[in-house]
Image (tube, rainbow, N blue to C red; front, side):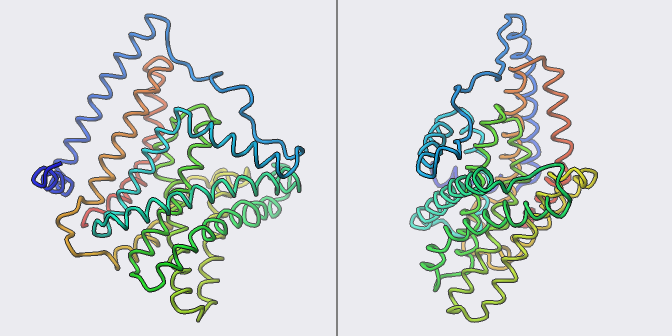
Length: 366
């Protein structure tokens, strides 16, 4: 791409009017394409139903087979996940946020390679978390049960899911934090966020695969994906400070880490506990608050050098969200009548619009 063309893209990414027009064009094109595909496939009786397309063995590894056999089956399952068609929405969701995080720093080939390493470390943390879950829940019986008392259900979320995931993400980020101990705060913030983003990619892929649909990709773009990279970014930044200060004031890191574990558990409880079902609408607000807590230091330590020559986070977010949402509408229309696909799509998008505008307001002046 030539320099002049790239600078044109940079200017467009900061032009709100151009972003609105581009989003409307994308939405209009996808709407027409969805209607055509739905009508053509329905008339031919070839609607692409997704059910029953998974290989028969794609169940979770059996904890009764032992530690080594369970690890082998998990690796085999991860390979199948990466070879599935659901890797596309998972990769795109990751790419949108990776571009946004990297836009807070001046482009650098070496740093991009380090960012890729952070993503891979985050994905590795997700695989380790899956194995730990199999041991904890399958072998030790510490799992969620709807009939359990409320405090035991919350204990599962905080001492089970939240603690193991946040611990493993920080453990995998630790090597980068050590390497960066004399680096800049923005580098630690971005790489910690990318580590959490790698974890979210693997989790999204798992969810899409076993639900046999990538239709929740747009919702997860704004919720679970943001939750993971924001929590890891915030806690990873505290870990970087701890290592840079040679473990002086370690209690500050401990407070941040415990707060991150509690926040994660609270979000899981809002969406997973039957008793709190009526308060589930608060979960997106919690995600926005956590994201703001991460993006505040990102904005404070923003690499301002050459900022006007870099694409805006707002441009990445608006266009990326529009493309992903419209792609989901198109694929949904291939699996059933257009009116059903449009109805489901409209309901999911409408529920996430307030959260989308929360991010737009955060990026609009960058």
